[in-house]
Amino acid sequence: MNIKILVATHKQYWMPEDSVYMPIHVGREGKADIGYTG
Picture 1 (cartoon, rainbow, N blue to C red):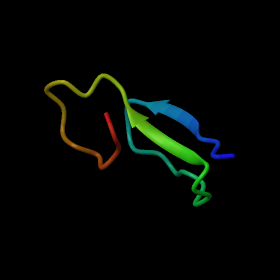
Picture 2: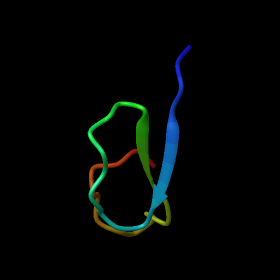
Picture 3: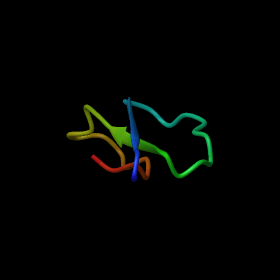
Picture 4: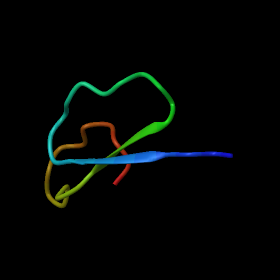
């Protein structure tokens, strides 16, 4: 079983290093890239 927990954020934040967490950059249009999917 492959489980992902999507974490929506509008700014860079400390994320757990466990691969189950996947940060999503929301509200990114016109903003600098912070390295998250979005």
